[in-house]
Amino acid sequence: LNSINKKEERTVFIHFRSTWVMLCCWVPCHPVLRIRNISAYIRHSSPFPFRQIQRISCMDAGGLDNNGREYTTADEMWREQTGDLNKKTLWYREGVSYWEGVNATVEGVLGGFSDVNEPDISCSDDFLKILLSERFPSDVKSQPLVALDCGSGIGRVTKNLLIRHFNEVDLLEPVSHFLEAARETLTSGAYANSDMHKAVNFYCVPLQDFTPDTGRYDVIWIQWCIGHLTDDDFITFFKRAKVGLKPGGLFVLKENISRSGFVLDNDDRSITRSDSYFRELFSRCGLHIYKAKKGFPDGLFAVKMYALTTEAPKKVHRTRSKTQSNRPRKIM
Image (cartoon, rainbow, N blue to C red; front, side):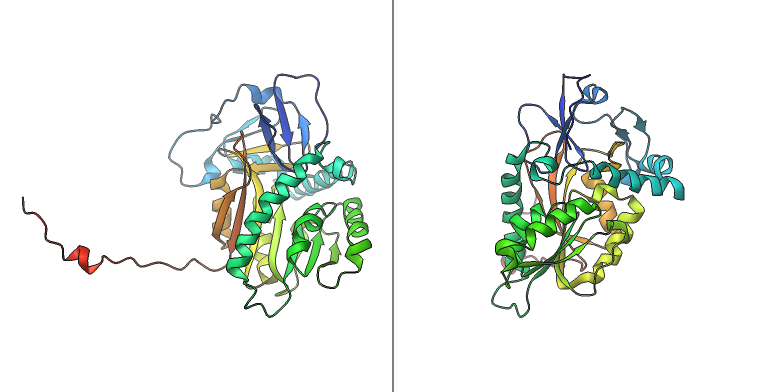
């Protein structure tokens, strides 16, 4: 999130906690960003020069890191980065350590671009309103709506979005000074006096170690943090977290996506996955896409929101109308 590498000034990249974005002629509205330049990216025009072959699995797609190192497959990268217990422990330790060096302020976590907060929230708000109206209409609600904010940071998304729509919000964040800042904000002033919309629990636990209470949440919101999880931990997290959803509940995942394969960030220990990469992982988790929407204009990477359910979508059986089927045909 917040440094400029003066060695390379030809191209500017914005780093959104878990991914990289190249600026061409506009700055995409996105929270938690860091400006940085990477000379290795300059030679890669859109789309990335990954292997253009028929693939059985998106894990066969190549990728690269922020130093320009290329990987043939995601499996190759994961073996190198987290192939044994010591490497995996270091991966997560260094990720948390990176964010421990960031100030627990809006300006800090937004890398000096606090004006991106409003467009991000507005886009999420539009998406969430649609989901709530379709899945939890007010005329059939019998219980308070409850949400979990994963990778909550200083509580920016909870404060500006979730607490307006949910009666209770729990926050999950592994960086302790971020979580303490969120607690201080959300348990004081007007928030402390509200019985209808309030932050309840503050969990200082890494995403890969968290198991929610059974049937507590209508929505589990996961924004710009899933890139810190390895593929294996991505899958096990969602499988554990399923128990935390109420019947009809949803996961909402908001992330940047690469055009193909993946991009590894060696600094904060995270990767940016492609849409097909995400979809394969969703399948392995036993999750189904209820709705998906791009969150911002396209750049080198797009921001995308996925609403995910545990139940398979209903199949629609289409039959030809009698009028159409009985219509005379010309005989040639």
